[in-house]
Image (cartoon, rainbow, N blue to C red):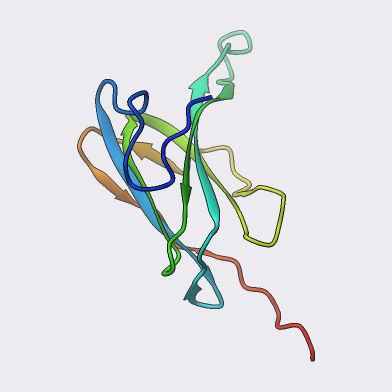
Length: 126
């Protein structure tokens, strides 16, 4: 799978053809959460079941890491529909929204602001 740079520089692979951008925040209790890994996963339309049901499969993935304010950016991503998934700094598993629809559809030359992801955790008692 293709991997975009963790900074804001795209790889040569990511920059081919029409592209757009996406950005957003990962928060914990309202504050930006640094060092979260974030992926945009291309939703590719696969076979339909007797022409009645669209089936999507995962395609190319693009990676980013949140900065000290919890912000992530994907630049020069090929136009299309994508799911977003994220990994918290202290966890090894990936999290995503449980819905079938894309989280974002990248359009030519546009920067899409994604809804902030709140990852509130209860404070650990001391």
